[in-house]
Amino acid sequence: MVHIEVIGLEPPCKKCNELLENAKKAVEETGIQAEIVKKWTLSEEIREKYGLLLSPALVIEGVVVAQGKVYKPERIADILK
Image 1 (cartoon, rainbow, N blue to C red):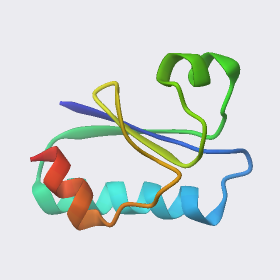
Image 2: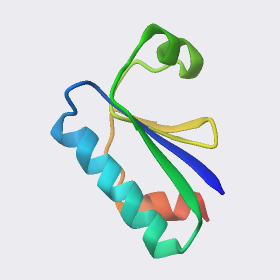
Image 3: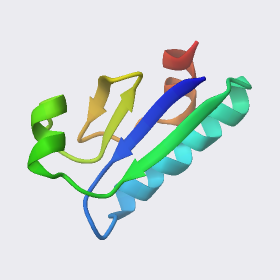
Image 4: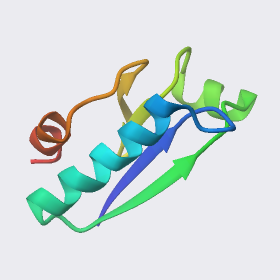
């Protein structure tokens, strides 16, 4: 099972919610089994762990694949494959 995190600010901004929905669509389209976790905080711990400067961020299997961008479902699906 693939572990995906969508990290943003509290309360979640439009881009944060859009990235979360795009990640869900990508998982659905690919048929890959994945756990999607939303984290609406940019705590010091998360910033240090991932080196994040911008939100929203997309983390797949512990690797930051995007920050400050909203990837389309197709692009996320390509990364998952």
